[in-house]
Image (cartoon, rainbow over all chains, first blue to last red; front, top):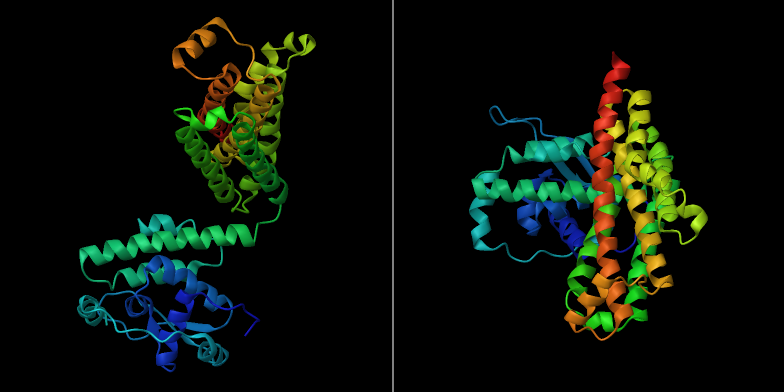
Length: 105
Length: 270
């Protein structure tokens, strides 16, 4: 992992969400709901983490009917070390968000 | 909306364009979809701006330096006016005018960043010619506002350059690149650089002459306004005219330039 300055609080929340289940592949909308970040903040963070090799990505293989594959993300080995050092634990997700999270998964 | 905005993502970000678009198809509910789409548009803008600032394409350093230098000069001249003529700070209309000036300068910076993001041959040609066209327009304004009689005798020529310079630049680029888009970019570059140079010259001349000449109409308006100082009043009026220049120069350049550029591009293809 290239040398990186201390991440912002929003980036630390994304790292926290990814580090909570490091072996799972996560998708963007799910991360947005879990971290309570708008897609406008989340995607630039994912792009930066990906460019710095903290994050690896792949396309979804098993497709729901007629839908295009989602981009999935998880931490690299080096990224997991970095996340353990810098991640913020996430607070509870507000109730109004939970139904959307279930419907999107 | 998302597909249109994603066209602006820099090269090498195709995966991210597809990632956002595909993710949207999985989001349920109209409000959530709108929120997600608008967020993605904001994300694209942020990614685009970061890429444009951090990794400028080759051949854009000079044109960016000229535009950013022009913006810094315009901001410094505005601040100087407020410092030199403190009466302006309490005059009605000054702060809305300052807000308009800041908005225009931000718009100039955004346009320059967006326009300098492309590495297509047409875009590079547009930047090179647009820089020359813009400096020519700025030079013409210098001659128009020059106090010397020698230069005054040539006032008709710079007026022609101001009006037709961007159009000629766009026509040259349209003919060489054979694409109307490159011609439009050249016209806009001419307008951006010409507008900044014109504003800088206009405000410098205003400060050097303390807002003179004070014509009869200006003196009458000054007495009616109840303003405490004639020079400050005249400088404030000229600042307003400077803002009009800052707005009109790019608009005129874009209008005339895109017409001329399209015609030249069409002629070169036939």
